[in-house]
Amino acid sequence: MALNKSSLLIRDYENIRQILRDVYIFGCYSREDFIEMKGISGRKYDKEQQRINAYLPKKFIGKRRVNKKVLLYCSYSVSDGANNHLADTYRNKSFTTLDITAYFFIQQLLNENDEMTVTELLEVLPIINDSIMFTKDNLRIKLDELVKRGFICTRKDGRKILYSLSEDIWRSFTDSELVNIHIFLNFIKNVSPMEMPYQFLYKKLSLYLCRERGIEVDDEDVLHFKHNHLFNSLDNDILLAILKAMKCEKLLRVESYGEAKSQMVIPIEVIHDSVYGRQYLYCLDVNVKLPKVMRLDRMRLAVVADKSLSADKKIAESLKGYSNKCWCTSGVEQNLSEIVIEFCFDEVKEQYILRRIQLEGHGGAIRKLDEGVYEYRLKLCDPDEMIPWIRSFGERARVISSGDKQTERKLVEDWRRALERYDSL
Image (cartoon, rainbow, N blue to C red; front, top):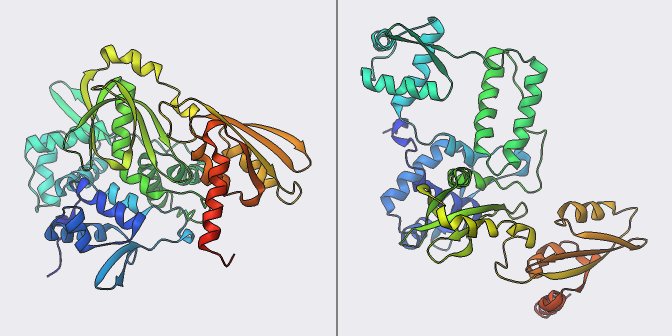
């Protein structure tokens, strides 16, 4: 028996967030692992898999057998351009069949009629669709939602409220201007930590160009990204709650995976690691009055509390500027150490090395010592956090000193252990 697509609507995104993240990032969990380790029942897991597959492209989630287990993984290619298929699951969350019906049919009627009242809409709706019944109350709620989102507008005529379609905001733009905006949205939806609003607008503009201007824009191959962490879209609702709390100067209630109690914190700074894709919240725990760093992908829920910052506001203010003192998130209470790195490279053939240092070096001081030899200095909490970045330069980078942290010794020791394990080198 075929599945009713409406039964696969994503009403609670939390049910599939963890499954999607683990399948996409790790790709080493089986159905049994999710049941045993994640505490998800077999029936619930199967249902969420059906929902996920309903919104993702065919073969996006693949399967491979290891011993007796079937492991799920995501098959993703860089040649797929700037598509974020995970965002499609997020775009389709939290709506019902009634929402869809209201969205399309109300706008269809208002497109055919300049203005209509609730009563007039209620009379005509059953004629174009008799499968879903509206009442005056739920129709008014849907109309208010459409007004709030800017799809329709209202005008009072005595005691009557007349509804009409909103003005076409794209009307004054030329075709070439809209195509350029479309390409820009394709870029920003991949580089902004808060990407879902741009994802929504990108899809909306694609449909508008096709339907209203007769233009089909194929810009998926225009942009390619070195560090494009598509899974961040799964946490956009968490990030939005954090940003709202910061803007309104309110406390934030956070529930994390594996913790029974929620925490009340003051959000101070959101840190986005552009290389590895992780996102962090630097905050003040109001219970113990100490700063802490929390990963967004470990948060199950984030809710803006009613309480204002009050007496803790001064403490939070004194903690600002944390990210200026660290490479990423390490060293909440550590003193600063200065790291000195010497970079040696061919300035003619490897000019990109200098550009990398300038772009990725977190504002460190760069001084030319000789032809092809540069000195880089930076003060931060924990120089050890830089080790992966330093390694990425291979033999071109050598740590001269790092204060008490002795990062240079750690790098030498790491290489020594690597040589012992791979003695064929």
